[in-house]
Image (cartoon, one colour):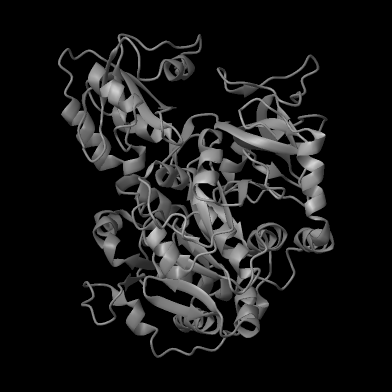
Length: 603
């Protein structure tokens, strides 16, 4: 297969690879059937898998974090202490515990503990501040809060605005048990030390269809949305990504340098490792400079990525450690075709299981055949339909139905919704309608709108192309444009504004760009920067600001973002840029523009 954006798969790209899998076909078929046969009322769950692994792989490593090491047995025991403590204070089925912390080992313990109890861990993105943070907590707010010491200040800023119950409890998590706890909080690590390590009685009562976590995602519009995570989905990826694709064993170590409050770590990396009794090695924050040191330290044989991770590693200077590893397989999403082969060859990684999915979707693709520049295939019923990028709507035929694209063409991904492949959607059910199409190919059918453009490569394989709608992805996060626009529209000197994503050379995703019109001849960029930096997560702050004489609208007064996006930041209007490690905008000069094109700045 050729690896540019336009080539499709032929017979000899696929059949020899299928032949290579022949010895594993019986196992693959068995596990695919197992994945598809999980029923919502089956008594199987994330917690029951961990308890089974604690017996089956008792003395093998299960979890590594900094200098902490847990076997499957001791990992399960630690989770049990958390679960038994929360049972003792009255947490029960469907109770919500707000979990606001960075990517530390306690977040994993909390997720698993709630999974064993039947409670719900609402995993708040630690990058959020002020109104988005308040909103995310209130979407599904309980009376119990677990806050990492690194985020107490951010939580305290919005705490008075929460609708707190009289019996609300606040727990504090810090690495050292003996540390002094802030007033009003209880030191969770100290409290669980003497609690029973036995499996809680609740685990065996948990059903696959139960809700165990919320993962927050920005949709095409609006504030962050809480997508429902059920055990069934974790178990499906346990078979699908774990046993069918990655096929790890008890001697493997899966490195997870990305956060567990997102689904890549939570429902791809973790179940993929658990499926074979492998260990997961976790890092607080991704670090390019420490990546290969960690690979050596943890004896890593596989890792999970997002596109940005691969781009950072690929752009980094050569390291003597980068080829001194035992990594055979990696899994993730967003590895772009422009660096795919260079990345694969430089780091000598034989198998890349690129995947496609999202926190709220009812489909996943994975690259079982290890085909370059491809997200693989899906057993679910899906279609790629013709889509008008400018009007941001599917194209219908003369009788009002959607039309599928041809092989080699790009279309909007939609997925059929039925009893076997439901759409769990969001905690706020009103949001679900925005993600569904009805009467697509026939009267009465229902399809999930994935909101992404994919290319049909043939043989049920596809390639990711881009996101659509009023959101874009930057720094591994979804940015909802109207949340940025709300802040800008509150600035008195701004007449109109539009936010959209643009490509920067040598980066993944799309950087935020803001176009504004203003009546102020001497518009104060420092005021704009202050409002954006203080009111938004760092990844959502626009990199570029364009001062326009006017912004074109449709006949119904909707702003036309597509022409602005096409012109990007290399346009005739005055443009300002927020360079890396700064919090202010400077004029985008020809010199800076040339440096951006050469990749001088690490955006």
